Length: 80
Image 1 (cartoon, helix red, strand yellow):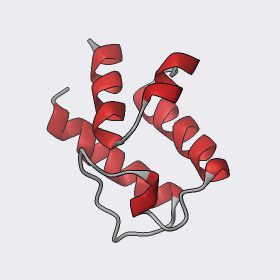
Image 2 (cartoon, rainbow, N blue to C red; image 1 turned 135 degrees about the vertical axis):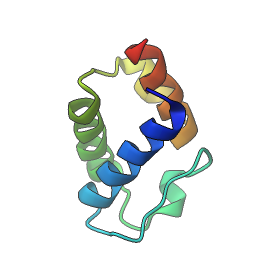
Image 3 (tube, rainbow, N blue to C red; image 1 turned 90 degrees about the vertical axis):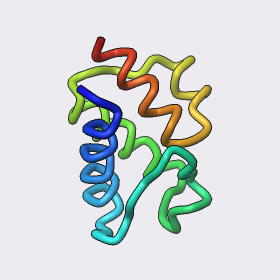
Image 4 (cartoon, rainbow, N blue to C red; image 1 turned 180 degrees about the horizontal axis):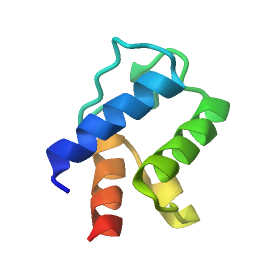
């Protein structure tokens, strides 16, 4: 799967979790960029991403993610 394909799927997950069809995530998107992205929604988002990509984030990965680009990097590493 290419990075572009990962972002297409991530956009779908973000739009579903936050119930907002206008969301488009990029490498630099953070919780500050999405109004409803709080700690509870972060857990829901991680669970939805894990389900979409058939993987599990470990605690080290969760705390190290600073933006969606880093999330995509971890997803790509887990898929290879």
